[in-house]
Amino acid sequence: MLSGDLVIGRFFNRSQRRAAARWLRFVLAVPFLAFAFDLPLPVLAAVVALCSCGYAASLAQQEVLVDLASPAPAIALFAAASLLASAVLTVPLARVMRSRG
Image (cartoon, rainbow, N blue to C red; front, side, top):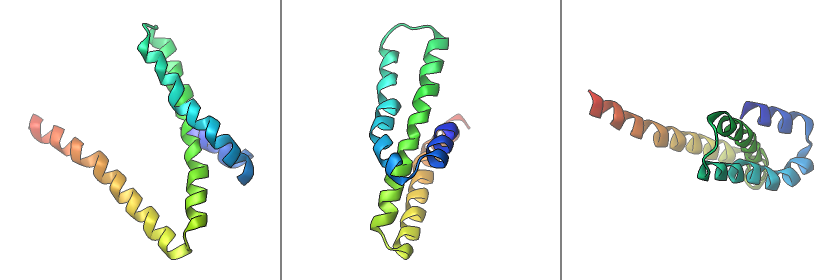
C-alpha cells in the first residue's frame, strides 16, 4: 500500500492521479479473483502485493473530497472518517479479545 501511495502521490500530478484512479481501482479489486482458483501460495501472495498498490486510488478520491469541502469542514470530515475507521476496526477486535478471555 505504501509503495503505491508513494509512487502515485510523488510522481503523478493531480490530473494524472485522477486519470489513474479508475485503473487503480481495477488493480485493487480484479486480481483478487485469483483466489477463486487453486493457485500456489506464492502466486496468491504476489496477487495480494499487486492489489495493495491499488489503494493509491484513494488519493484522487481524497483530493476530490477536499476540493468539494471548505477547509474547516474538510478537517472535521477527515477526523470523523478516522474515528469511524477506528471504530470499525476496534469493536470487532474487542469482541474477539473478550470472547477469548
